[in-house]
Length: 295
Ligand SMILES: Nc1ncnc2c1ncn2[C@@H]1O[C@H](COP(=O)(O)OP(=O)(O)OP(=O)(O)O)[C@@H](O)[C@H]1O
Ligand SMILES: [Mg+2]
Image 1 (cartoon, helix red, strand yellow):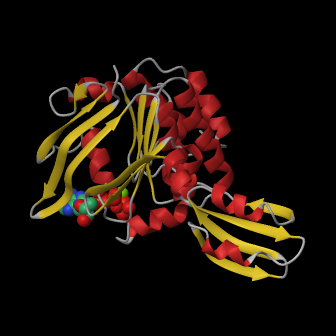
Image 2 (tube, helix red, strand yellow; image 1 turned 180 degrees about the horizontal axis):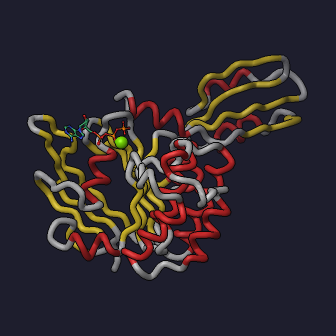
Image 3 (cartoon, protein in one colour; image 1 turned 180 degrees about the vertical axis):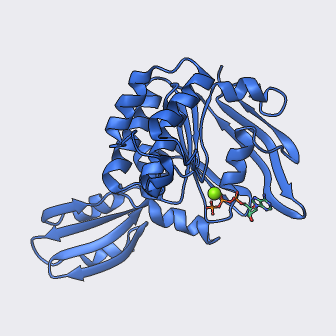
């Protein structure tokens, strides 16, 4: 199998409302794909189509080489899925609920369940109905991953998780990838996607507006730098292509560079530089420009 997820012209209308408009997406196996977009953009609709829970109005989707409509049952058996608003069964505790699902699915190693519960600091003895939102979400994550699926589709998996558990969750995602699996996850938060995804797609008003690797995005992103000189920063810095937002305080120039820093460094080199501080490229800015339509 050379493609984990493939869609052609995938479209979904609800009445007259077009929630998804001709999405073409190809995701190879072994990739972590972050699916980003504002509220109402069509993330959940895409995910429900891929999971075989909605029928497309037009277009096609195959998941693990199986058509999501015609071969739905076989596809679902191989999929791990976390819905956007996971609730489970309120009357069962975590262990009862997960054992119930594990028996339905078959092939679940219970040690995987207990070790994931431990990593996520999840108490399997409490009823789902009394769990906090974040703790219930952990049960949802465990049920999506417990059968070690080769493809996992997660709709806003980190909602409600505290920062430490969020990190643990990202570790679980990396484990899936390290085992050769594919992860498709939706989110509103660029920084968390950036930490784990190889590629990102941005959707707005039902259309994909960007698909790119995180590496390429970082190359395009603004990189903030602080250059401290022995004397006054040279005037010439402001004339360099790609340099923006230049301010000078004392002997330090604060600026942002778009693209390569080579020209800037060449211009600065003849002057005595005492310190260069380079900040991580800021993807948030690219991202927001696509969100509000400037991209
Ligand atoms: N069952 C439905 N009936 C009618 N309209 C729907 C239905 N489900 C979704 N929509 C509409 O489709 C559009 C896309 O919704 P969707 O839930 O896919 O967005 P989303 O990107 O997941 O948003 P959020 O970030 O808020 O979760 C929205 O305009 C929504 O109102
Ligand atoms: Mg949603």
